[in-house]
Image (cartoon, rainbow, N blue to C red; front, side, top):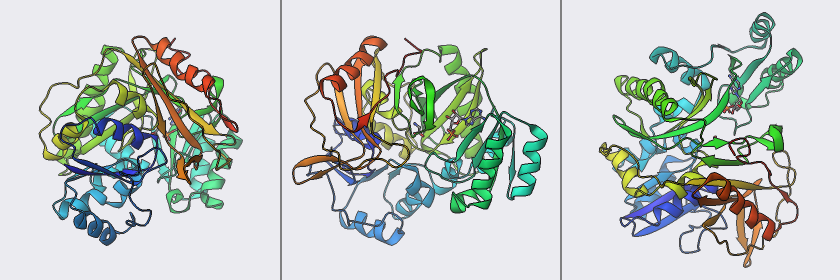
Length: 421
Ligand code: AMP
Ligand code: GLY
């Protein structure tokens, strides 16, 4: 198959790593890609405009792709899967209707309520005064979320009333998130331990990956600002087989059944961000409609199955196997970020990368190739990912690579998987 992969992050680097191992793959192209992809896979920067249906369709048809894999959420929310499937081109990723699960927190909340999926109590508002009155009535801690896509920056966990008021001011009065902040979801604060569980679905059946745990804050000890994710590991021991079963029965089953009954079967990957309480009961923090980044980097080292075949089975409605083939091992990804991230960060840092050993993969994220040099171009630069029989060894191997290959003007968290170890 001739496959087009859309995206440019560490997630796409990891998906490509696994897609290349598929016997079904004849040719892989990536757009826009990053500095870690070979020239033979990278497409020209002006190949197409992902925001424009005509541009995407023209390029994909002209180049006769058999299959398209979409990494990030924006094209899915814009409807790329619908555009391509109308033209008869199979595309891995949910329809625009289903992608609203990530594109609108209010949409996701309403469906969870309708289908009885456990989540935090919430209310949606579209103006400053009534949302402020609600916060004054509810008190803190409380969580304020911009309704639409906000590149992971739309959520404020407010431990005091002044930060809640400030979050509302930024959304409604300063217009910080533009259209994405036209509405706000205000949510009960949930306590517990977080985990991410991904499921592949063909609209009817689903297969779950082992749980991963992300580290969202920038600095050690879960301090500092929220980021896209500074590291992850899987499987996360907090998710015991009993918890995993509860997630299947109370989250994925009703959610996917509900979507199907609405006439919009969910085909693709559904990401459940979960809060697990001390009794092992999961509640949904958020849904995403694509693979998580950086969790995917760890999961792609663990997956033994043919990823392209699995994706094809999802699109074709033929996901009939009973479980995913996963190595009995642990994988850990440590993200190397540019100094300053997630605020304004340094760019064009030269990356001199040694060859990894010990089952370590260096997945590029925000990098580019210029005149034969690899330079940083984004905040999250690399994902150093290792697999080993036990969690601690996988962590140690990723850190050993970072110690042996120091890169100036960058930083990484030193405590990835620390709590689990
Ligand atoms: P989100 O972008 O929805 O994943 O939210 C970012 C982070 O905010 C999550 O990973 C949680 O750590 C935190 N968060 C979101 N909603 C809640 C909630 N209702 N209670 C506690 N923490 C939350
Ligand atoms: N790792 C968090 C995300 O992909 O949204």
